[in-house]
Length: 204
DNA sequence: CTTGGGATCTAG
DNA sequence: TAGATCCCAAGT
Image (cartoon, rainbow, N blue to C red; front, side, top):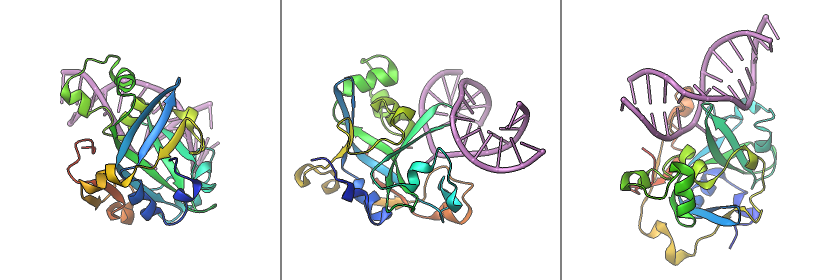
């Protein structure tokens, strides 16, 4: 079942934790690519110094964060990598959740091609398929084209995972400080990164 | 128009 | 551990 808009409304930290174990789906050329979410980070502007929407900074790039929940916020970083976020909370509250890692499920061969241009890869390469925000975007075929897209589309959505196949029953949820936000002063230590402890696809 | 910097990844 | 590589936003 596709996660409804209401899934993304409410308290961002709760939504972040609820996203763990759900399936992120992107359909490319009619082929479904997906993975279980195993690592996320919450960004809560305008008060969060790590957020692009800090202090209400509203630009073409960040505009979507100020809109309603359940939309994709995609941006390019370091000139070459894409990062995929989902907007949460109410209108004018510019929160978003960065998806940092997934465990591959559907379309694995297609993801291998997108990442390594071949399907014959080593174990180490397989572990690197989707274990980071830039890597998973590359694998899923997410680019700036998806910026601002609704998560209710037929080709981009979260699929709610039935309780019995949920990773949360096998892994403990850990919380810790977010990665690479050393400029964020007092927000550096906020424990807004959530992940499955010991899961092989968690970054780093 | 110019400039500085960034929620990363890979290779060596 | 450095280098790739370029959008984005702020300032002139």
